[in-house]
Amino acid sequence: MIRARRAQPAPGHPRPDSPRRAATPGRVAGGIILANAVALAVFGIGPVAQAQVALLLLGVTCLGHGVLASARIDRVFDRQLLVVLSFVTGAGVFVACNFLLFHFEHPRAIRLVNIAVLTTAAVHALFAWWRSGARQSRPRSDHRNVLTTPEMTLCLLLATLMAITTLYNPDWGQRGDLNHHLGAMVTELTRNWLPPASLIHLGLQIFLAAIDCTLGRTNGEWSFSGYGWVGFSFLACQFFLVAYLGKRFLALHGPWVAVLVLSTAFFGAINYPLFALDHASYLGLFNFSGYFHNQPQLTATVIGLSALVCLLISRTGAAYTYTLAAFLAATSFFFKPSFFTVLAPVMMLMGLLDRRRLNLDRLIGYAILVAVAVSWWAYPLIFDIGKLETDLLVRPFAVLFHYSSRYLPEVVLRYPLLHAAVTLILSFALPLFAASIAVARFRPGSWREDMPWLREALPILLLFVLGTAQAILFVENNRRMFHGNFTWAFQSAYLATLPLVVKLLSLVRPRALLAVATGLLLLHLWGGALRYGRFLIGSW
Image (cartoon, rainbow, N blue to C red; front, side):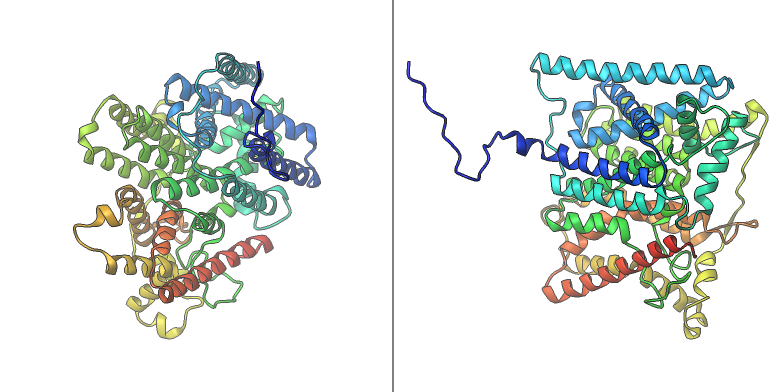
């Protein structure tokens, strides 16, 4: 019997099924992970400590994957999104379990339970992977990956840059909030356990304290070895989720995805004066880049972005994705409540608008969102502890005017309406310009053909409106009046709105107007880069 010879590839061209091509994404990720490991080692975190934390985070991801698989929604997502959602879901479940365990004040029991749970999750994930390969069943996901390898590489590289410059070295940058949230609060938690003396949001602190206990650090010590890989993981998820929102739901493609990822790192308000390295655009204008120095904000925003992605997927009818979105939104509340205050109303509203899908999935999601408020009210009553109260005061533009009055010209400060207009223009020059061009070209009755992605943009727009309203209207009626704590929700919402901003930018025509829009984009990026520089030199 004569067998046909397989066609040989041309010299210099690999076979279509070449293992070299298939291994490219894994090799890129491995190289970037190795670069982070080397950077952490340079800053004094040894390979053993790094390996322990990395294995624990892998176990957390396996735990999240097990939860998604048990609900049979793991095949709804592509493999990239499945990994991200497994990580954030696992983090939420891990924190919830340790929240209960920390009430028993028994470090050895906490360590044994965590090791048992994470080991079981890892073994289950390994067995499921082996069984699917042995039976040659269909892939774990029925969807192709949304981001390409170069796009994923850019996300990981920017996460590495931000992690090395803002997290790994304890001697760099403005460390006040970071050292308080990751140092003093974690030490206090591992010494006094739960319940706390006063009810505050401790999701991130419980996560890090649980890492300490699981690794045998039970005497209240804390080190950056616990947060180095955690912070990098959340940063990588942040860049990925923003790019995913833009590419899947708003149909961004090509170089615009790269523009979006870069904007996620450096987009900020236009600085005034343009080259001034001072307090100009931190609280005096609208910014979203608070994750440089506030890690609860970073983690809560990433978990909230995951909830937003699941909310948009749930509108396609995928089973139990709304429940997952509600669980992730609730998890973000216990890390930091800001994003939840705008995300929960949008989720409730979108569920009510889509009454045709009022099913068990939606009802469970509503129950989870309501349970968050109930638990926050009931917990202090059960344990007879105090609660951090926030006295709300409506004073439009109070925080923004307080800081921007230090550097804007006197002629602007003389007229409040002009002051407000300048503040909005410097903060939203590109979004306002691109949206104006889109509205001018809008044809009534043809939006389904011209902008089929507009339906997906509605929840994002609602987030932006609610977040902006909080930042403009509210201040705290106490000594923290000018701390800008009501701007955190806006920062998260603005980050979620960036995919829509870049989408509108990509639609600007003709070329002359596109050149103007590109110039505004560069000014926004320069403002964000100055903010990044101010963080590194430790001066606000």
